[in-house]
Length: 287
Image (cartoon, rainbow, N blue to C red; front, side, top):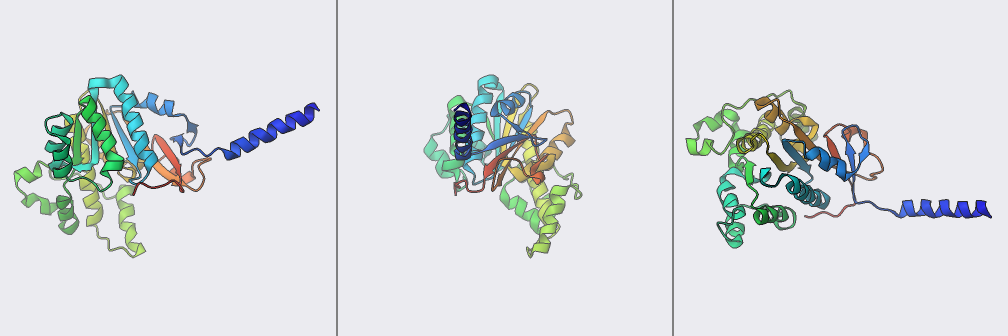
């Protein structure tokens, strides 16, 4: 009788486990599953947190907000936010809104916002607005990235000083041997029209985001930056530019990936960041 009871308990537990459908799992740099609490604990020790998202993934955006709230609870006035999704020529209007100098309707009508702003980034901006947290527009205006894509870094030299203030200082330090940029060139073998200027345009974005992060960060602060995962994966891109400027920075990276099954992290995603958020491929998208 006891054996039958034990077998029934095991069966119930097994079925319950199979019925469980977690929306995400978090893995550390070694590919070991960890709890969200461990990610938060490490975030409290970081100078700069680069939260790499999948732009249309709701789990990325939800965890960005939750982590921001948790870090704010500890850091308060020593927290700064920033994002790839806001270009530097929109820095003033973004700052005016989060500091309550202009109404929401003016900000949302006049700022250049991504199409998925209301679902994905508005909660972050509204939290910054509520708590009066500085929110920095870090990305280069796309018109200048387009100039690099067309003619290389040299084409930026002809811009006036007002335009140059919206990007990382020239000349740009660029390493074409970084895997993040070499892989972009390899896309040419897939039929895409790719020239050596494509990774240069990407590097211009990375350098500019790093520049405005450091311009607004000071010792004792924590800066959380939201960006596409590819801008910080493998500790390159933005990370490389940050460390070139200040090798003593304590940087924590978060990547997001999706897999058919999230029971364990795929080998190719192990080590891409300090923490990897793994989401089922079947997860609904925000756009």
